[in-house]
Length: 144
Image (cartoon, rainbow, N blue to C red; front, side):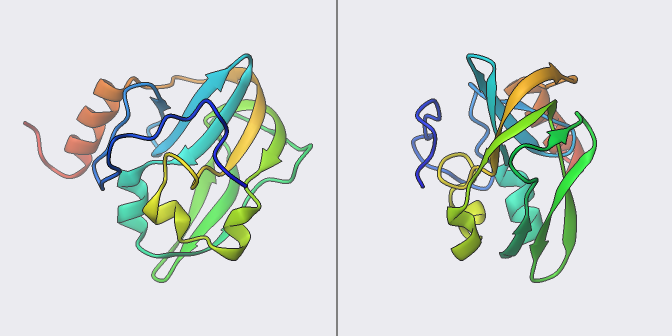
């Protein structure tokens, strides 16, 4: 499965890539909305902090997820982290390619490493790229 067509890969994905066309959450998820459907993933910042992703528990197709609530988990070699829904809505699709290769979340978090798509009913407090960059700098203790 490839990335949905509305995702435009950055010129080069790096640990601190923050594509300007996406919206972000305080919990380091990203989303992009196209005609009422959102594609969701975790940011490069989160992927780097987690380390090598080895397993994903994604929400089931057809289930309802609530903005800000846990809807899955991401397991790395060193930790298990909750996955939070950046918006409320019904899950339309999950990226099944990640079942065989969850490490794609680390290498291409904004393109083929997307996690799921949902029919958006409510987006709660999404951050702009600039606001998210400031949040990451603060999280790292860098207050530039």
